Length: 175
Length: 262
Image (cartoon, rainbow over all chains, first blue to last red; front, top):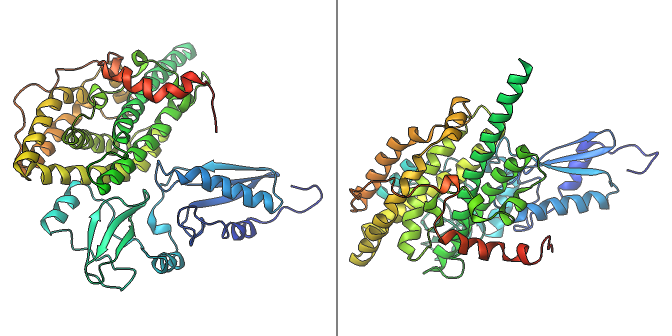
């Protein structure tokens, strides 16, 4: 930080980070996804706590780099980014606004209560012929959709297809 | 008195490093094996799913081995542990180093391991060491997802065509004698269990057998009658010849061009 100036308050800094997009889903920001957990000052050093979405998400390093670049652009040169594992990230932290943006972008947002329940949920889903949870098509809004694969184009998504309009789409997995 | 406490603390740390190498190496080697399918899996969806599973496992490896290096205190980070150790210093289960060979082996191995892994990670969320509990809480969601997927596939392929059934049964027979190592224990495991840091491996055996039996029945597959614990030794550094070939490929770049970065 430049000498003689007042340190910007953390709410303002969080506001700057609203402009940092997720590298893989650029319509939503890192703050809307809930992965920036906290920012605070340690004397003149700014500390940003970031939580990974998935353990092996390759975007994690890019996200840290983008946050650092943004803050340096805003004039903060003394900063540190910390990885925070606990509590683990959950899709519950994705804001309502971001869920709407995801849908507009063609990605079905996470449906609460569909997180992995282990073996019991898998078997129930098999017996129910794919589960009774409705994932709506982001294109036409139909609830008549089926899961094509448990994994999609990135670790955070699963592949679905709409039976009504036949559109294949990504579903943001509930975690 | 102080001296005794110090010795005890350092003995616990030593066991903890060994234990972290075991869980981290197992995650790494399985992740690497699964990643070998990238671009080669029989269908696109499987290709993507396997690559994502590999990513999760390698993500867990970074956390486990990162902690191992930190506690060891010799300046080795996760990368140094992964790229600069020979086979004899690896502590992974033999089960995970066996070659993929057949897609049936890959699917069956993931299932047999996932049942164990999910129970282990769930137990670790209760670890008295917050560093372990924190990693486990992060990994649990992913590991649970893996188990859903692999158990589902075992049923589909086992109770599928005659060919898929026979190949899954053969894979099961092939892997069965390696499974006992998941429940094998030595002083390292005893130390961790006594300190409340990790569940005793033996405690996981019964639940594993019950769940595996359940899914195999649904998959119309038959649990082999032979012993589970035929092939042991991976946890103490005695490996099959396959691990050396895997490491040769995985470590080539860092061995040929130490500290290469881009």
